Image (cartoon, rainbow, N blue to C red; front, side, top):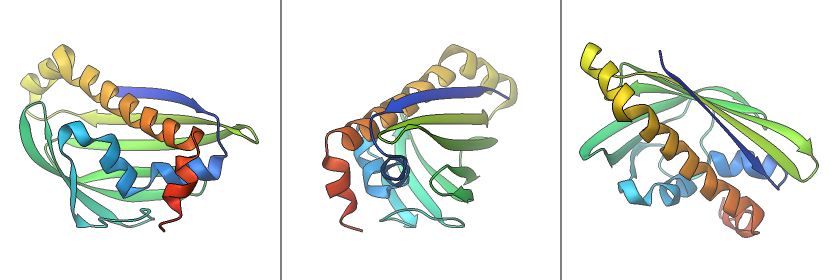
Length: 160
């Protein structure tokens, strides 16, 4: 199965970065270009262990729904979401958080997935899917980094 690993260094405390990473609203901001919406399950706030969210978005020109569940949760060091229902055969995303210093956090996202459609899925993965998913995660982390480093993140989380 393909694996994507993204590392992002963020100049902010680990607790802030962890909470921003599990914010439904910030996820929506980071995915504006795919018109993503949280349509079922946990649709607002900070997602927790055992909770599910169903997203509706347009990816690669296809309107789709994707339900994920938080299956592991070790604040502020790890949470794992796994697809429950969606277009992929399997999709598991680990979000690891490590303290570099008091005001610096390393985020390591590890995505392991299997595309649908057997051979055609493998071909799509080779041609464009892996790059698309990597770019999607990188863009999301860029928004988290921006909010964490510019002070907006602390104010943003006060709504919870």
